[in-house]
Image (cartoon, rainbow, N blue to C red):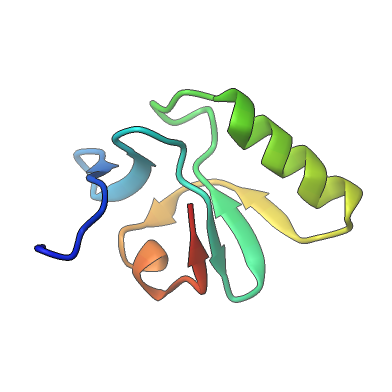
Length: 78
């Protein structure tokens, strides 16, 4: 825990939701992943801009539940 930069918030079921100061975005197996706004998260302007840019660039993006282990094994996390 000493190397942590931010706190990761999870719901009671153990699903990763967001960071303490930012939306959670992670590239897992080449797919940009972020929790759905149907979950108890803030939509966020930066999150919307990143998702729109991914769409415009033809990158794979998926909104939905993120298992707690997914950010840990992601190639990029923001």
